[in-house]
Length: 144
Image 1 (tube, rainbow, N blue to C red):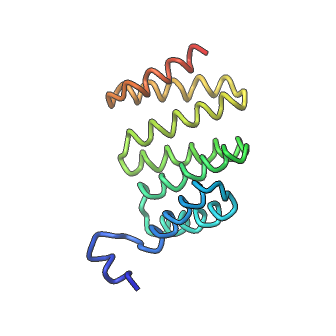
Image 2: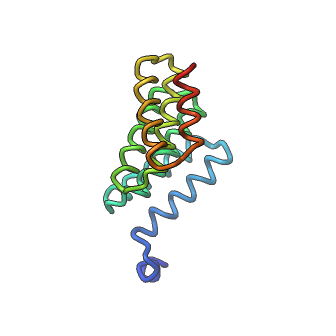
């Protein structure tokens, strides 16, 4: 019902936005099944709308969901896709944050060579954009 009005307020896909918000509620309530369903639906809609910024955020939430469900391979895949989508949208800070999440997941999986590679990338990007916390976390992961 609000779709017509949403366009006037710069909303690309109002239903995708609602699905994303609903998924967030389920994720906060630890209802991983419903959260995944709504996130997958929202992801499909954001990709169809060619909205990489929103896509990146949904992918990051899917990564978080997978970490909570101890699905580390899936989490790594989603965080990597979230970083790529963020880069495509030009949101370098969000990209760096997703690379940091990816590094942590890879570390938990014991994927040492890849951990070092992604941590280096995170440190470089964090330094370039002036995100000191990200740089420090990446350096700590490189020392670990």
